[in-house]
Image (cartoon, rainbow, N blue to C red; front, side, top):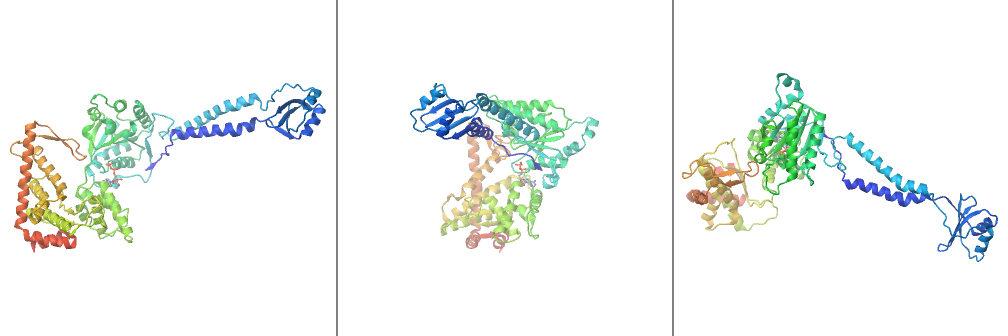
Length: 603
Ligand code: ADP
């Protein structure tokens, strides 16, 4: 899409120009224009002219040692340098010049007023005219002189616009947006039958899953103008400004209909109005205006509003009711197939070896969003350039997954021998517990090269396919795996290290969720004790139970983890020889692949 948006110049820029013009005018041009031409003559000429009666008025400027005089008709001004002349007064009397010490007017008063007052006003008016005309031209374009104007970016029709084919995966979302595209192509088909399109469509999902892209693709496919604005751009310092921006945006949209208005991060203005003291007046007014505008136009006038958010639960119910944003399109993290497609879409933009097993790369990048996958492909290309190759290979992609997820390798981080050994046992501990429980390769690769993210070792999990459900025993196994690292350290070195802090957090979160949200404890049965707040942003939870229950929950969490920890320790003790062998291998080679791991384990 072509974005037609001129860079926004701040208000001060225009005022600065005007001020400069004024100053230059007053100090340089004014004196020059208003100064009547002064003829330089010498003193003798002055005396001669005086004697011949050709002088009208005389002004003696003693400080500058000058004498100014006019011709007899007063039209021409002369200037002469003074010579010591004691008889000057007498000469003046003789010539009949009034010795009143009158000052000769060097400029015409009328011209002076005209130039110093009228002209600047004219300049101001002209500048104003020019700017308002410029603003009309790029309607909707930003302008600092106009408060309360929406500075929505307008994308116009363009042949190279984003299409649905550029958005990989997300088939369900694309399907439900396809209808909008058809409607925008031919609204009459829908009007005839009396069907009206949803006025607003809310795209919800975690960050980087392609919500903005989908909205642009709808515009690209249907070939209509696309207004894009972020929710936060409405919120201004002054109350009422946001509301007027909303008004302006809708006015422009109606003029350009059929078109698409896209409001990114709508939660910035669409948050629940909870009437808290000291609430944000500006935001509420903006929201009210948005609600009114959405009610104000008929469903069939060709303006479709798309909005994106990753906090749908925080939106005001008035905004999500039917008639406003009545359709919700989930844009979730891509599954295995989706990831593979996204990788391929982005791989088209770089030169890459055709031997790459995209399925394997997609499996390695489990849990990555579209934006992360795009980043992974780009990192691989950068890496290829760095190592002087003309195309990226599979190992570039593998390494870049690690870079995107765990950070760069720390080239000169020096682990002591003992530390390296501990890290090796820790990582093998996890992998071994996982493998012993499931009898399959638990990891793609383990490395113990420190990363810039602070991780000393890094384990890349494999994912066979998509998992939508997890059973209680799978969850328990996962907790046991998480405790496996610490269990191995305790078994071998009889002491604990700080390396397990992340495992501990994850294990605790899982165990808590099992008890409070998944109903997997005997005592509480199927009672929801915790609610998730930000489903798409980290998933914070809040407890909703009595203090006694909370204490009981804590106790059960501890018991659950303790049981799994003991199980992991038991498994490792039983297979101590394998643990030593694998850890030694990892210690020496610094990297072990899933296949090598299984070969040693089964060997
Ligand atoms: P969101 O608005 O959901 O935060 P964006 O639409 O801005 O995410 O996506 C950011 C970038 O991630 C896009 O520019 C694109 O390169 C990449 N991306 C995300 N999802 C996809 C997808 N499904 N297919 C292709 N690229 C994607």
